[in-house]
Image (cartoon, rainbow, N blue to C red):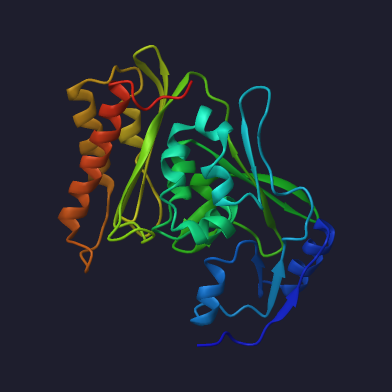
Amino acid sequence: MYPSRFAYEAPTSLDEAFRLLAAGAGEAKVLAGGQSLVPMMKLRFANPEILVDINNLPGLDYHREDADGTLRIGALCRHATIEHSDLVARTQPTMTAAAHLVADPIVRNRGTFVGSLCHADPQGDWAAVLTALDGHVVAQSATGKRTIAIRDFVTGPFQTALAYDELAVEAVVPAPTGTRAGGYLKLERRVGDFATAGCAVALEMSGNSVRKAGIALTGVGGSTIDAADAAGSLVGQTLTVESIARAADLAAGVATPQSDHRGSAAYKKHIVHTFVTRILTRVADGTERAA
């Protein structure tokens, strides 16, 4: 199927992009990697009147660490850049674990980290990772910038808190207060498939004690699920068989999967429990920590 007729614009400055988005009055769509948007347009699930291609905007293809350890990811940073980044491999175990599981190499070469967040797919990977890491998105329009916590950014399936005249210019992972640890596991029927169930776990450790924790789930609800109670149960604790089991129980308890051709709801909850247990056990064993 061919997409509906649309106008195509390729601005060369942020100001021009903001004018186009404002003029679109909600009928414009931003194209970065296009790995989600273009297939949706071909299926006519998305029918924008204007396609605003931001690939000519300068200065948005970065990922960098501030002096305090804050990680910033620009709107045109590709999945593959994150996947092969020495910086990310050295400092972000949860992101490192997820990067090679995003779709397939073709998608990772063109798709963008921020674009994945904006797509807000309930089975997407990066929104769960950023939720576990307590990150946020920087949105910008002609009137200025605002910061939106990722927990507030994704408002539902394929829905975000972005206004129609705003562009998500950056994703931010806050500086750690301890040694980062964690991981990401995803069950998929075949390589590159959407998640049947996925779990992101991000911890900050002080010795053997958990100083801060985040656990988020994908593929087991209408949008990314923040398993805050499960994460909170770990704070101030050492990772023992008992504390890990409690966190896994609480995480599985907030999953709201539907039975379908990928498996029953009970099976998907079991996968969540298994994945949380597996990641936390690896952290306890010392195999899932950043320097």
